[in-house]
Structure formats: structure tokens, C-alpha cells
Amino acid sequence: MSRVGKRTITIPDSVKISDSPNLLTISGPKGEMKVNLFDGIAINISENSLSVSRSNDDKMLRAMHGTIRQLISNAINGVNDGFSKVLQIQGIGYAARTENNRLVLQLGFSHDIAIDLPDGIEVSVQKNEVEIKGINKQIVGQFAAKVRSLKKPEPYKGKGIRYKGEFVRSKQGKKVGGKD
Image (tube, rainbow, N blue to C red; front, side, top):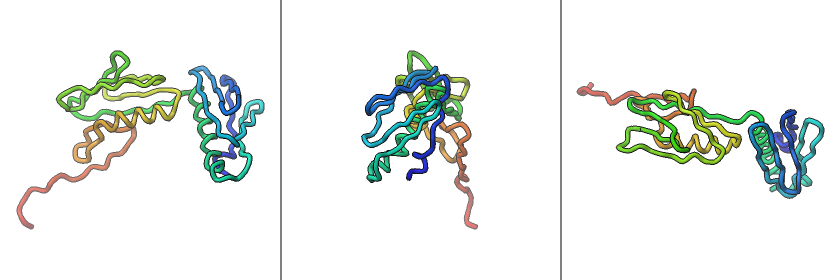
């Protein structure tokens, strides 16, 4: 049996769950999310806990058992607490700002880069840190990865965009000199 799938999920008091065939609606203080259920996956809701089970040991059901359980757990955490990623911008002249539901970045190119914010995402900029918040873990992570991919940290001077706490291994520069 799936190790992830057999764990129960505790439901906070502020979260309401409504179950309909093939769709689970989870609402909380930060918003509402819907999780599509797979045929053969059953949801058992008791007072303040939720468990996921499967009808048989079919290969596809075994694969989806833990996945559906984790999607439900992420949705519950998202509508209750939310998710956030913090990016750090390092480099002289590198900057970020928000305007008109867009994130505008100056990353040493001849032009500014403007990225439209997806629905359900909030971005706040303070000095060299960009905080991305939302209730959907997948959208928050994907948007953070998209922003980071615009200027990945380079290994010689460390300039670029990195996750907060990410360690970038630096390389030694070119050796100048004659023959040894």
C-alpha cells in the first residue's frame, strides 16, 4: 500500500470540505480549491480527519492513491495557511518592482522584463527580495521557477536570482600567468 496514501489528514476547524462524485471542494479563510478525484479512489471524512483509499490494487490506482492524498493535503494547507516562496536578487543594478498586476525585473539586460501575475498569486517586493504567495502550491512553485529561470545565479560572481537559503557553489576564476 502507498506510504503517503495511507496517512490520514487532519482537517482544521476553519476548513470546510464538500464531497461530490469525482470532485472535492475545499474552502477556508484564504479561498477555495477544487481537487478532481480519480475513479476508484474513495474519500472517507470523519469529524476532523480525512483518509484516502482505493478500491483495488490496479497499477494506475496504486499510482494515483498517494498523489490524490497529497493534492488534498496541499489544498487544505493552502486554503488555511497559504504557500510562499522567497527569491533573492543579487547583482549590481538588479531590481524588481510590481505595477499593474505585473512583476517588472531589471536584470542587466537592455530592457526590463515584465511578467503577468497568474490568478491567485500575490507578489511583494522589498529591496532585493521577491515574495510570491498563493493558495495553490503548484502555481506558486511554478511561477517562482519561471522568475528564477530568467537569470539563474552564475557560479563566478553569484549574480542572478536564487531561492532564499539556496547555496550556489562558486567556481574559481581563470588563472593568469605563465607556465608552471
